[in-house]
Amino acid sequence: MISANNVTLRIGKKALFEDVNIKFTEGNCYGLIGANGAGKSTFLKILSGELDSTNGDIAVTPGQRLSFLKQDHFQYDEYTVLDTVIMGNARLYEIMKEKDAIYAKEDFSDEDGIRASELEAEFADMDGWEAESDAATLLNGLGIETDLHYSVMKDLLGAQKVKVLLAQALFGNPDILLLDEPTNHLDLDAIAWLEEFLINFNNTVIVVSHDRYFLNKVCTHTADIDYAKIQLYAGNYDFWYESSQLLIRQMKEANKKKEEKIKELQEFISRFSANASKSKQATSRKRALEKIELDEIRPSSRKYPYIDFRPNREIGNEILMVENLSKTIDGVKVLDDITFTLGHNDKIAFVGGNEQAKTLFFKILMGEMEPDEGTFKWGVTTSQAYFPKDNTEEFDNDLTIVDWLTQFSEIKDATYVRGFLGRMLFMISTSPL
Ligand SMILES: Nc1ncnc2c1ncn2[C@@H]1O[C@H](COP(=O)(O)OP(=O)(O)OP(=O)(O)O)[C@@H](O)[C@H]1O
Ligand SMILES: [Mg+2]
Image 1: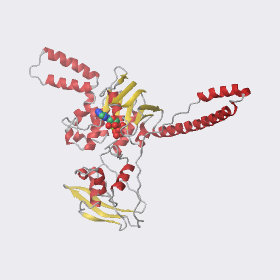
Image 2 (image 1 turned 180 degrees about the horizontal axis):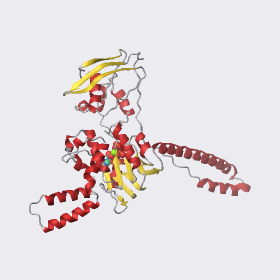
Image 3 (image 1 turned 120 degrees about the horizontal axis):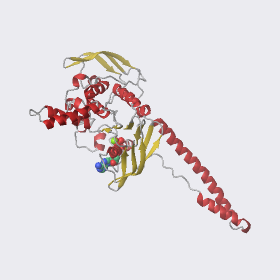
Image 4 (image 1 turned 30 degrees about the horizontal axis):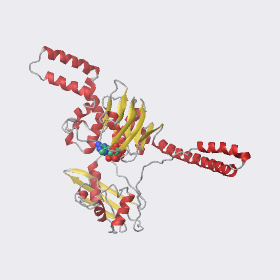
């Protein structure tokens, strides 16, 4: 069990958390939700002890081990994949390294012998002999093949690194598992694997995610951060949404009833307070009136972007035709004889383990690369827009956000572009527009 007791965190003058009391217990999976910047990552750091709160404290059941999947993906660049996973259990890793150092000595003293046997005992207690095979099983489950287990982390692709760090967090069956946006950069297979893992995991899990399908599948509880407080709901994301909406509806109805009562009492008082025979009743109604308090309704402070996607013109029946398209990169046939026709109302998701193949295919469709064989044709009534996976190049300039976006706007007017940015939640007051 892990709990936060009267936790307050101030950053500058602003309280990010104010007197938060919450308890997370065994066997439950808690989804920690809230708007961008509400403090989800910060709260996980407080729970893990990485960050001290201004007031209050965190209590963990003595002897319980906590592990944490963070968003820093570069910390282990110099270590091998297998070592990185085993480091998830810090004490076990320490023992292994100390043992190795002793056995590597040329002049092995009596003291070394005693120390080595102590370490061996502790190592055996912790099922140390299983460590490598346990780590390998986790990695294979996440789709990191055995030939990568001895590579160093910096040679891995971004998505592979996330999987290794996830395996590190899961390694050695921690009692409390903190996960900060674990599904980012994971493919569908790895997400499905993680969902199964978390559903079968019997200890405490606290997970931050913006993916409500994932939250619905794995969470038994939902903890909502808003207005510097954390509200706990016993249910998944959909349950939180329904019950928080219901709560607001109930409060509104209760307020409406109270307002009617207030009006009734006020009418009675103003009619009869001058009337000697009724003045006693008027006084008691005044008292009743003073006792009625309206509930303060504070709906979620979340804001959602407004996306208005309207085509410039009606499109015809011919949208996209791809015929016998193939492409070989560095001797590997990445795309092999692809043929399909995209229809009028189709929306297609391209899925699959090979990242390179999908990106390559999109680059070909956008004319950035040529196919070796085959053809594709966009319908004459269509226009295309492309959101590339790696968009760092797009921002390699000193333009302001407004100027940058104006390049892509048909209407070259700063007010129009600012309005558009506002709908996507770029606030004029907070962004260097
Ligand atoms: N060390 C710090 N100094 C100043 N401000 C900070 C610091 N750490 C976090 N913040 C601020 O605290 C707020 C909460 O940040 P946090 O990263 O916890 O949000 P989050 O809920 O995880 O958001 P997201 O959904 O975008 O990941 C933000 O406004 C952030 O700018
Ligand atoms: Mg965060």
